[in-house]
Image 1: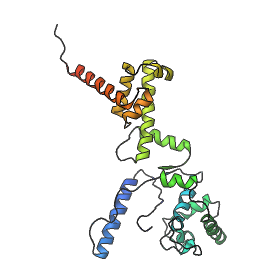
Image 2: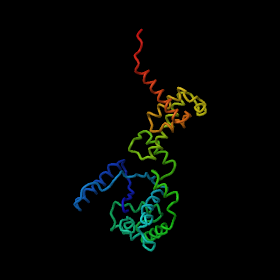
Image 3: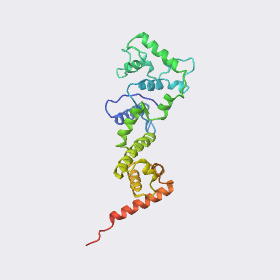
Image 4: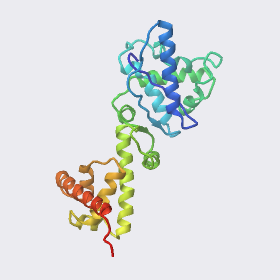
Length: 265
């Protein structure tokens, strides 16, 4: 693209961060050396989209990338997708001897239900891609790619959130961080309800300043990235302002109790 690129990459090991750091820095160094430039080439952090293996999600993402020149208005209606020089589609339509070994053409063609190394399969694949350029780019599957952090089934999404809830951090993207924080929060609420012997209905009935609620809110504030507004709504604490005041007073009182000296006998 004119100011960014898209890359679909499979990482057998959990080393995407290291790989992207190498790719971006190596490209920057070589480009600056070749053109006698200096400084950054890329600005900002890259966005990573998790893609579920199988179920057609790889096909959706690869088709999205190959159709980007159309979406960006870089191709005229009469021009073939193949004419765009900066797309890997060229290699998908080339023979095995002509393409780089690291491009896994078999994976994508397989998801399209096409056999490998067949001239007919290659022609069918190009026809399919040319037909897809006429589709609506605003449908749900494309929105999930352009706006979300995950492309997969609900079960896959929930599994990822469960894993990330254990190690959420500042490096996670906004929506992903928010959703993983919610998963972690629900886990904490479940633990506290079990400890107190409360049901969800009991939680709603309890008064806003109930010690059990305050202890629960304290854990959520310390162990998740949920805002006071979100905590207040989930625990029935009233307005965010009153909840913030009440929570601050509760935490300060607990801190004073912790640091106060014990009376001698």
